[in-house]
Amino acid sequence: MQITRVGMFLSVAFTLAAVSNIRAETFNVGGAINWTINPNFNYTVWAKNTSAMVGDSLLFTYNAESHDVKKVTAEQYATCDEKNYLELWNSGADTILLNSSGTWYFLCSKPQHCSLGQKLSIDVASSRSKAASSPSPSPSSTASLLPSLLWMITLAAIVVSFIVNVQVYPTVFRRLVVNVHVSTYV
Ligand SMILES: [Cu+2]
Image 1 (tube, rainbow, N blue to C red):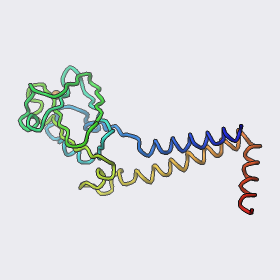
Image 2: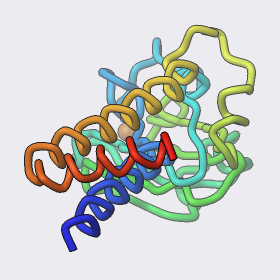
Image 3: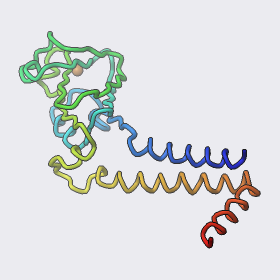
């Protein structure tokens, strides 16, 4: 009975570790600048430094009285067509799930905002490896550190679960050690 619970602890730890390996990311559009008019800031250049993949999300943060977010086509993006759009968000804190690969286009539909630079095109890869292998101006980005970091989290989860098992079920653990010991030398 208790052995089963130890097994459950371990499987939960493994599941958490597995989930953390594929966990989606949320990118705050524009970083500290957020979503605004800033002629010196290029949102598409910002996007090239992210490595967005299907399942990730974009968070648009802005003053809802001054801005909005419209998902548009490539043509609407190129011409700053602020009237036509595919989808509109205007809460001031919009999380948009990137549920398909390819290039996504966004702009602010307030007059002149798009032509003043409040527009974003972002490439969404179908997998993290493709996103990481796409050309990036900064090769030492956090994306390359991510896999090893996730392995460390995985190991930590296993170690923590082990320690918890030892403390919660000391007798079971002792029995487990004996079993392992015995089976090793049989
Ligand atoms: Cu705007």
